[in-house]
Amino acid sequence: MEFDTVIHDGTVSTATDTFKADIGIANGRIAAIAEHLSGGAQRIDAGGRLVLPGGIEAHAHIAQESSSGVMSADDYLSGSISAAFGGNSSFIPFAAQQRGQSIDDVIATYDARGARSVLDYSYHLIISDPTPEVLHEQLPRAFARGITSFKVFMTYDLMNIGDAGMLDILTVARQHGAITMVHAENNDMVKWMNKRLADGGHTAPKFHAVSRPELAEEEAINRAISLAKLVDAPLFIVHVSTAGGAQIVQREILSGTRLFAETCPQYLALTRDDLDRPGMEGAKFICSPPLRDTATQDALWKHVQSGTFTSVSSDHAPYRYDETGKFLNGFDAPYPKISNGMPGIAARLPYLFSEGVVKGRISLQQFVALSSTNAARTFGMTNKGSIAPGMDADIAIWDPETSRTMSLADQHDNMDYTPFEGMELTGVPETVLNRGAFVTHKGKLIAQEGQGKFVARAPMEMGPRKYLAKERNPLNNFGVDI
Ligand code: DUC
Ligand code: ZN
Ligand code: ZN
Image (tube, rainbow, N blue to C red; front, side):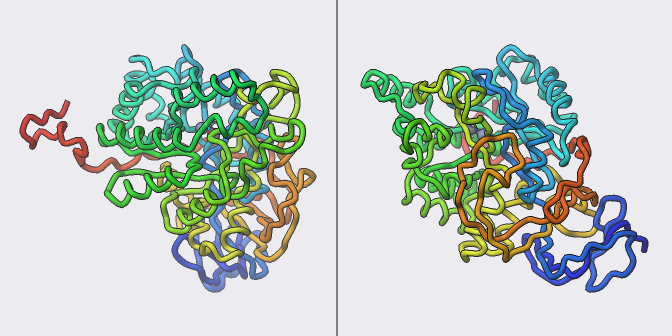
């Protein structure tokens, strides 16, 4: 067999196995895996390094305006390059509907933005305005294009769609085989806390953590799950930041609810003490939900280890530490007017590898599952997320031993800080292939702008109704499946 590329002398790891093998690539796909493969128009010597499925970043804000109109610092070119240097071979940022905007217009807008990507990409649709036309005409057109996941918000006045809006979206998602992602925080609790903090003159960045209590997340996660159960729809809780929230997710998964969740490196690595750095430095660490404490970090790691989380995602939301980003409303803005989010698309996998695999908290197989395979399966990237014949040749070659100190100087995004500055991490993704083509090689960018392609994703298998709400089960007395 003729191969375009052979990767030889690698240690291959998937979500289930680790083995020594050569990989033959033809026409962008994995064509053969064997102990020894000869030939290949191009041969890549892995030199015993790890050969893993390229990471799939399932939560990133790229070329996206926030609800208050602030454009993220990264576009699809810088965001995808940064992702690639972090060991990713594809990503699924958000395409956000502003109120009043049609979904067709949202998709056209993001298609133009996505065309610059060096990695394969798709979008999760953020829905802020679920009108009947959106629900019954525009979303079905989006599914037909292979956009099979949404995100909704339970917080922020300009984004929160209310419980009824969520039920409408969950119902449509179930009909079409889509999964609904949710930002779960109780809007009124946060607003009430904001008002009391403002009345007391508490405006410094550190009060951001006070304003969004753990209870606000736990209550909203519980409610979101109840809404999803009423209509038997699968649900994905994004950026879980609390022990209580993770515990609810674990309990529901164990009781058979079709539920998925992620946490993010910032909740494992940083605490709310970072919000109290001198001057306005704390603004760099404002994200929602907020950073918590070391006890929460320990609890979240246990949930990473024991399988509560489907994936660990970056929630890359890059707003620079200047007047274009964090300080759009002034350098002394009160915390609610400081842009919300932090960068991390390049740090996600090196952090998870170093703190997870190298420190013995998770196995290499868990790393692959959490960084790639589970996202591919959950979000319908059927040709990605594993190393097997027929799959896209989306591969990351890792040096598992080299250590480095994270610093802004090594970043490839458009940011002027990294929240992980100074962290010592072991393990470096040196080379990334996307459909067999180099994106990075030995730490250098090889890809051309626009090399990535839009990935039409498969619908999620819904399976039979479970009737978790017994009142909707027609087999029960008075039950009506409306
Ligand atoms: N939610 C996100 O998912 N990212 C950034 C800010 C937010 O509220
Ligand atoms: Zn969110
Ligand atoms: Zn986010």
